[in-house]
Length: 306
Image (cartoon, rainbow, N blue to C red; front, side, top):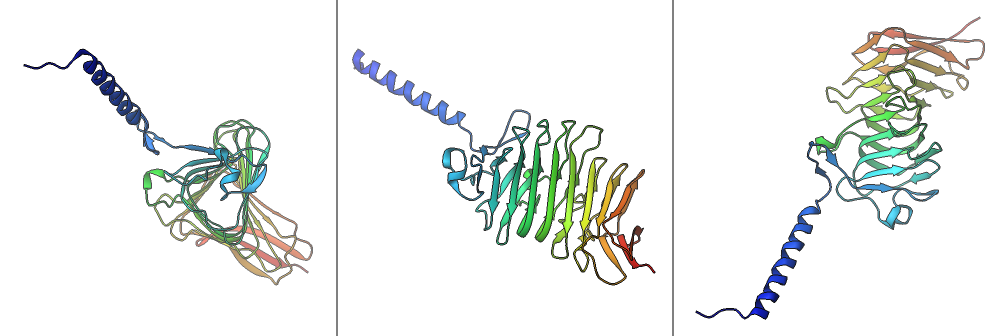
């Protein structure tokens, strides 16, 4: 029986060992996203590196690589200003606006913008003293409506733990669909404000059972009227929940229309737990304004006094 010469055996051993090592390395490199041993999703992380740049330009991200593959998690750190005025080419798993430090970060969504994310956090829910702001002046934003349901979450504005961060979403035009959570539940939690500015915005939840709008203890839902009034939140397929300590605020400094009743939130299901702060400000005489709970939702009555 013929035998393999010793030098050839050594060559074969090295080749087999190299192949085994390559297979092990390949097996260790998992494709994002994947679940860890606890069953939690792990995403590839990207950080916006430009102080002022465009969300959809590769040069403005770390590694000069545009986050598009495998539902990436994207971070806009404190001090950065990112703008989107066209369609973003892929859905994101998570987008954090305000993280890594205590400087405010800003995301501008302009006319033409189209963005879809599993969750949007303004700011990071667990970064101490972080601050984030989103200004939407046009376009389309969808949060929590990915076909891959496992990656869906909410639009968090100042929601999160006791880390004293601040979040603000200013919505003056465009279309927004999301499950919306505003503020935190405990003293010392993040503080959040969601502002509906003028008559142009269109907001709706996603029509799923838990896709509600919830204003928590440290949260404020604000309506800023223009000359004619303000857009309402369409929650006909979901609900509005107001936690004890929550604030509903209406600013009428720009209003100059007739006596009218304005539907602020349209919903068949409005619930309150404890005391909710109802505030009106900016209305000049002879205007008077009152916020009321009604069967169809939350309304504002503006009248001209004598």
